[in-house]
Length: 303
Length: 136
Image (spheres, each protein chain N blue to C red):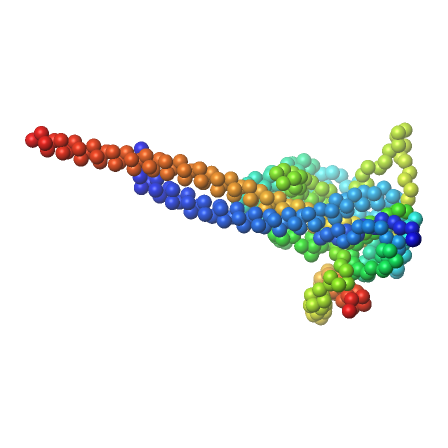
């Protein structure tokens, strides 16, 4: 039977932790409310943007635009790949950060030559983790000038990131750019995803039944397809990055809330168990004392 | 009653407008474009500027910053960074933004910073212009 004082100290320390987790739960739930609101406001834009770009591309005549250039002359092992990874700024949010980091590592393993991969990590937790890891086993490099927080995403930040990435793509520092973020499927389900930003994919070329390419009616572009695409694609990149930031921030708050809620609950359970144990120990001590007194009195009587 | 087409204006922070309009005038890179129902398919980008659309014979104005438009014969979709009615514009904020940008332009800046500040100045000036023109 453990010592009474020990149990009392443990209960006190658990109560301290309980206060902290409970406060964090309340804070993240109010932050989540705000993040949800901005997610709801941004979601129509995010989805409509993807949808519209798809339909615009179907109607685009073939152009030799720089953003469509797949740079086929560069062999796969020499291609320089950039990954924008959105993680959280703080820990204590369940498996949220862990999932992204694991997923990113899997993506890096898939790449032909990890040494040509460059990571642009948003958020403190991910950045520190990858910087330490990459130093040890020389997998990919982490851009140390890429310092952005993931809290309260703004369009301004998304614009800066998009400008930076597009600049690097144009100058040939990067040949492919991917975006890794956590998508909110519904309030209880999250999914880590990769989106390819550059070069722009002309996906879903509509194929007719006989396998030939169906020619879709071409839309007109003012002033020219090249020029419009030159505006459109940075715009698209910015919108997508912003949308992903909002989604990821909302996911982070959601998983922190769940994690802190379950921490609070298990702290409560532990206190319950420990106080039962404490009471038993106290009872046992009292019983023992009574027995001692009674037996002492009895031995006096006998004399 | 004039023929109408469906117009959607979606900004990053909200759905600005959804409904049938008779006439839409946008500022594209190389000038104003008027769009009526049955317009040929068109894609163009919109710089920071002003747009107006007609609902039931009444012109409505809005300040828009950076976006693009896709037009099909029976609908049009505008996706933009932000879109505001003249009466929604926070004049004080826009003035502050303008002053900040002007101040920044006086400093020595890299080329990239220069473009960013110029774009910020453009947005502020556009907001002020639209709100002064249509909301007194």
